[in-house]
Length: 279
Image 1 (tube, one colour):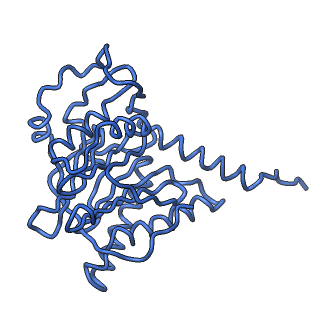
Image 2 (cartoon, helix red, strand yellow):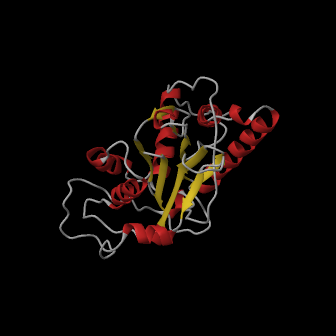
Image 3 (cartoon, rainbow, N blue to C red):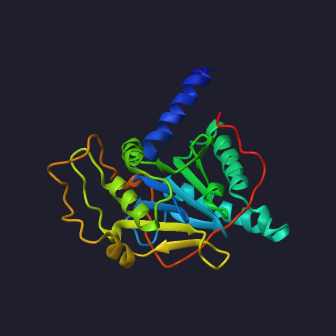
């Protein structure tokens, strides 16, 4: 009788992590930026039907990169969990922290089990409060780790390059218009030169605390983006880049299902159980 090959747990986990990271890196980056009145999400996404950024509940939004079918399953599960908790108890019992905990447990279980491949996804779960200091953004990785991030965060594609661009130029308390311009410029920043991303290829959404209705999620449509961004020059890369390092954020479409900006939608939440430790 043949004996199965032995693979050490360390090597197995490393192989699974490498597999998930490669799939995520093939996708286009998603940027989350805190501005004066809420949280902004921007992604390059030419699809008009498949979205990376969505509403979960009144004050809570969800963004993802990676394989579309996998993160769409997670999004639907989050919506169902939030609706059930809000209906059974109180809408204030639905919190970004509680959803981040649930996602962390699911991703961690899938990653550590030997029966199926790890999910090739990374997630943002964001919740806005009554004041900027109450806003929360949680970043979840493929293995279930959770990080509480502040000011801005990037995942997928050339995340390191985009994050370095934001680190140099981000200022707390910016207006929505300035935050959108900054995020779009960061996504278009490459090592060959800064490229122009057409407004039709951008998916932009916000959690806006100034909205009068309970649901704070809103999509920014291409018509407003075109007016806001104005004439940014040709769509080809600039042959004389002014900025230092970058890698193109565009990538193969096999690792994710791209989305794009449709009409308005919404999101909300409160507080919950302690967040899962990042280890």
